[in-house]
Length: 341
Image 1 (cartoon, rainbow, N blue to C red):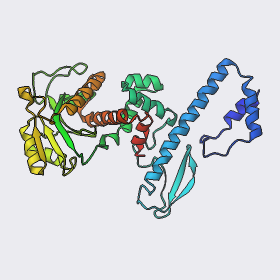
Image 2: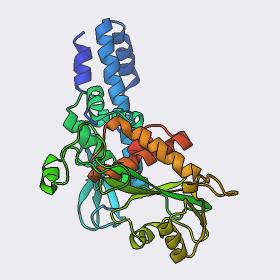
Image 3: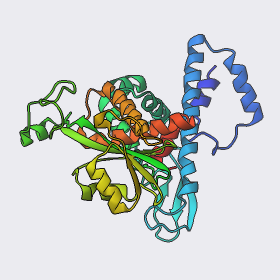
Image 4: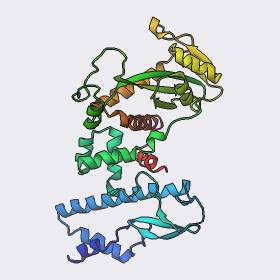
């Protein structure tokens, strides 16, 4: 019985598809030894194998990034050669500048530990778990779960649709300005008293307490959005110009500002006067973008308010979930998005 634990302990850290295969005779001996395990030992073995399978899947996703970004992360040269392995990942060396790196170098997940839990992290993100629930599931501290969340969202916040074609619906939605977890900044600005678990605005209607978010969505379900730091024509024009194709048809709720932006961009524009109860005007409506607003706000309620400084991350997170819902992609796709694969 001593052979079994010795054999497990001798497996290298990076054991996986890149390691030498076990000999057929040794594998047969392992199969024979499994019959002598107790129920508790079998559970431990299954947990160990499950962890290794997760590591293999994570490594496959991470290594896949090199096919898309084969160059050196420092000088962008493509004369790169393999240079051994470390921590279960292939390392590379740039023949131009001499720097060594792996597939995670230069990504938001570089130097992040516990890769065997990364798939659990993507599952927690797919389910939209709170930080505390995600930490409990992955058996990590809540500050670790919080850090992982925003490291995984580092690239997701930038993954927006550009050059939207066809009929593009545009409308604004608003969320409460929040300093959640940033009490010092709130007290420094002296704008209001702290709220409890999200809370409510002190004033009804629109005010400085509300943060505007512009969402553009075409009839194919492609979406882009932007937190409006300044809600004026100039800023919105800068936001919308790269987001719209030249032949796009813009449909809005009759906003004078968006009408001016459409005019400056020289694109066709149709307005539906929702303030007067008009929902459609022929083929023109903004029901798709309004439905997106509704789903986003419903999804956000579980967090009891998020700090405004992190709002772009949550917008990127929800866009990724929306894309996955349309395409049927698995939660592991969130890992590929996080490393830019």
